[in-house]
Amino acid sequence: MRRTALLLVLLASALASGAAVAAPLVVEPQGAAATLANPAGWADKQIRAVVARGAMADSVATFRPDEPITRGELADALAMLGYTSPQPLESDRPVLIRELDARLVAVLGLSSVSRSIRLAARDAELEPTPYLGTETIARLLGLRVNHPQGQEELELLPGQPATRAEAAYSIARLLELGDWQKQQIAELASWFSFPELTDWQRVVVARALRFVGHPYVWAGFSERPQQLYYGTAPGGFDCSGFVWRVYKAQPFGDAPLLTSTLKGRTTVAMSAEVPRSQRVGLAALRPADVVFFGSRGLKSKPQEIGHMGIYVGGGWFVHSSANGVTLQPLQGGYLTSFAWGRSPLVEAGLEVVEPQGLARL
Image 1 (cartoon, helix red, strand yellow):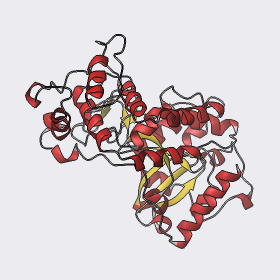
Image 2: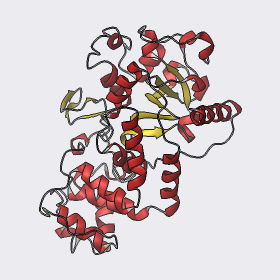
Image 3: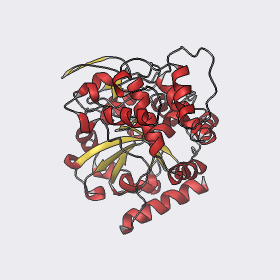
């Protein structure tokens, strides 16, 4: 708790003073946006890079990008690239997205780091999925690609088979990573922890963490196939749709008012609903608070709010961004663009915060 408090004080001081902070660790995927006009070839660059190293196919023409990659094919590709990868049992079985991410995290030597994240959630009684840690690490390192609007049908859930094109993208990204990036991940995980949670905070945070690993889908608000204004889309969330799913799409048992606390669907609407007197400052954030980010940071107005997520404690939040749903430290751009938070649990009368415990904005 002391470490968490110190971290938030330092973050708040940096924000208030305008001090420079390190860029966020997250690496935004680049491949898909560059090939928007050619949906079938969205991973051409990555496929060529992997084939040039002698992995996955003899040539680009024989690559078979849309077919599922098998466990044996993945092991062979990693071995060809110099990563120890014994031949697995059931080598002809398709590799699921979460299995692909877990394997790449392992060959990077970050299994223990990912495990520490999952164990922190387990110790906080949040009942995490087995892949919470590996999906967080994979997405912070940019091993997953966000398919842009217009190609949402390419997005895959953690439990779906990975295509060979998806595997090529991830492996090509793995080959680009330097030791310093792996070291940054290890350092971040060394201070990752959850504070002591109230019962209601635990309910909200546990629900949010179940979706880590799901893709970003424009206007998405469900983990299931969904009918959106532009057509049918796979399961996934945009940033406000993720918060909507956690807080509004499923009843909270003994707290019927909680689902009606957030009323709007967009970042602008949800940020504008809370009066200035109820806005929560950075140093006063509590788990399950909703956090908003704007183009002018603390000076942002509701119409300038462009992103949002859910604070989980310890200087981290969970959100849906270009890397899909993941845990993220409040660093770099996320720190400087932080505008304010709001506490649906307090607004619904489920928790009480002493006036001196709120840092008003």
